[in-house]
Image (cartoon, rainbow, N blue to C red):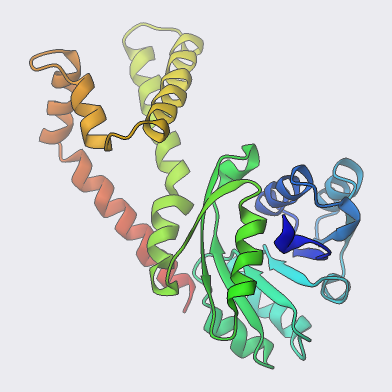
Length: 270
């Protein structure tokens, strides 16, 4: 937490990801009075102020003025308007963007004055302290800036550093990844019900199976393919299921789906 010592951190936007980060920072020992957030929605401001005890406002300029580190947590389509409001001398502040598809070059250009910008892509499991995040520094960002960004995200996520050119791939794999995972669980529940289980029973089994498989994957030294092989006895029930998936080209379709997400991330940045 040394990298964050004495830092005042602000959020432009107080949605779910900002909340996840704020909760992580609080649990990591950052005092609430070092944080501030802005949002157009009164309900989100109330959550921050009344539940998290973090100052909340509808004035983005106030967040800028009271922050050493300012985090862009708004929707990508709202970035242009926000950047126009806060552009100008940045006085060495660090800007961190979690907006999908928005490049550091664009932010630097709109802010002016050679700002320090780090781009990040976290995911929603940060809400339970189990997120994944990738960070990349912009043209003017320093190694110290990167260390500060890493410290912020490590309060609720596993963090890797990548070149910015790979951020669209990160967005497609881990940013959107939880949705693919939930989609698979949906299918398991639907199949369980079709086979005669109650929805409650199917959901309980699918949830615990997903939890256990994820924990096994993250604690085992084996590659995913090897873990799958260990469950798949030749001629057994799992073999029948995997064979059907292979015949249907499920893996190939998933790869295409992730590629589509990456392509959409690139489009959002144009």
